[in-house]
Amino acid sequence: MSPGRLVAIVCAAQVFAQIGAYFWPALLPGLSKLWDLSYTEAGWITAVFYGAYMLAVPVLVTLTDRFDPRRIYLVGVAFTITGHLYFGYAADSFWPAMLGRALAGIGWAGTYMTGLKLLSDRVDQHMMSRAVTAHAAGVGISGGLSFATGDFIAGIAGWQAAFVVAGLSAVLAWVMVLVAVPGRVAAAPQSADGAKLFDFRPVFRNRSAMAYAIAYCIHTLEMNALRGWAVAFLAFVAAGTGMAAGMLSPAVVASGFALVGTLASVCGNEAASRFGRRRLVHIAMIGSILIALALGIFGSTSYTLAIVLLTLYGAVIWLDSSTLTAGAAGTAEPSKRGATLAVHSMLGYAGGFVGPLAVGWVLDVYAANPGAGWTAAYLMIAFLMSLSLVTFWLMKPMQPAGDRGPA
Image (cartoon, rainbow, N blue to C red):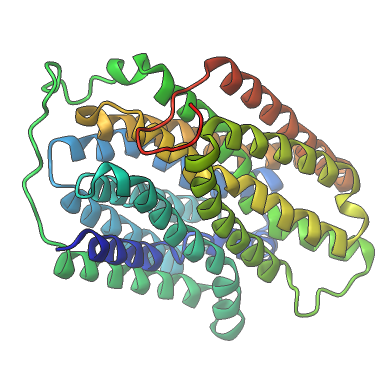
């Protein structure tokens, strides 16, 4: 199979597997009222998806250094199918919802980075950065559409039907990879310590890869805090300002900024390879700090302003998304690339787990004054991003071999 066709098939499968990932955040305001959830409980249901991912990804992705990534991918999609269907048929309160989202999180651990590993093992170094970007774009497009799709299906047939459709879409992804992607025997580890499959010490000693991974941790914290709570924030602003959402409902806006972010991610990786990866990451981090501050101070005053700021925020957050992942993959030891991506993804989704939960906790602390709660949440994110910027600058990671910009 040609590399281009492989990339197209895997990216298309990711779209179908990912489409239901953000149905819960899109439907969070209504389901929170239906199940009488606190902000913290709603945050837990959002966060458990990333927590399950964080715990499963070191095992599942590292196994791709020893076994065919296609097999691991199919197992991951099976978990995704189970999680969505369980949520649609059985979730009626906090704990069943937690279980359904946890199963979906394990599924995402078995598809996102394993799909990337499947590609990186079968394309050359020059094409790998673009394959990573195409893969991230497929995930981003599907994730962006997830908000509006979930809201649309729920509006027509109910929220349960939305999750059933998500499960059936993942079935299509499973069939595509099973039928269209040929299996292969995974290459034996080439380094002297390659037999130690779960020995992550060489990864932690790779200063460059770890710099990208640490930055990815806070990047994902910020991204998932935004995705997890954007619909609820916009609903709060609309109610507080007396602004009718009209066609630009909170779910549609969330889809819009996620799609804008996907385009920014593709452009960002291309710009990083030409003009310098570190430089691009610095610009993205500074931009996200400034916009988070603006949202905290001014975002609640106008629904239109909130839409503009969130759309800009999505673009800036996603700007260095595939840039960071391509940096980690491109500076990893080849025989430890699966383990490196496992650590990179584990740290990223540790941040992704903390972000939505931290926002929910802050909102509960300020439950008597929700406006102050949203301000405090965005200021907290700006502070954490400032720490990430300083850490990345001090670690000064290398560029992947395929980059043409200044080292």
